[in-house]
Image 1 (cartoon, rainbow, N blue to C red):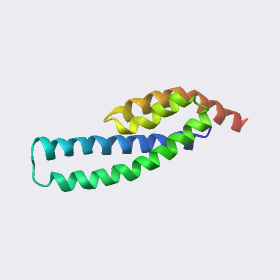
Image 2: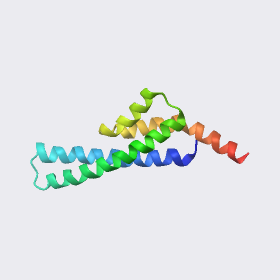
Image 3: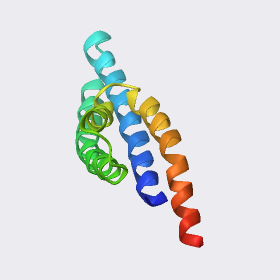
Image 4: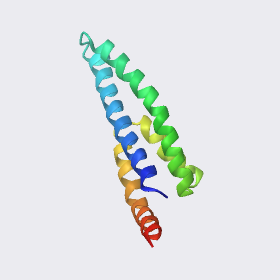
Length: 111
């Protein structure tokens, strides 16, 4: 598997995770604290997160299919973008698991 497949997954995991945390904070500000302007912030971040989550799904599915993951693991990674902060932990775990595989492929290509 190429390094670029893992890198684009990692970037989208962080983007999705950050947007989801911002969306959660916006919802707390809007519904819990009743802050003026939080509604517009929540709307804009929600739209951005929704569209970028679709990109995350595509990249995560591509990574999982190339890594030949079982369906359960694939679903776990795909759903990580819907739980605040989960994307950060899942991304770290997946990156550590696949680091050796990416390194092995890179050294085979050079040989």
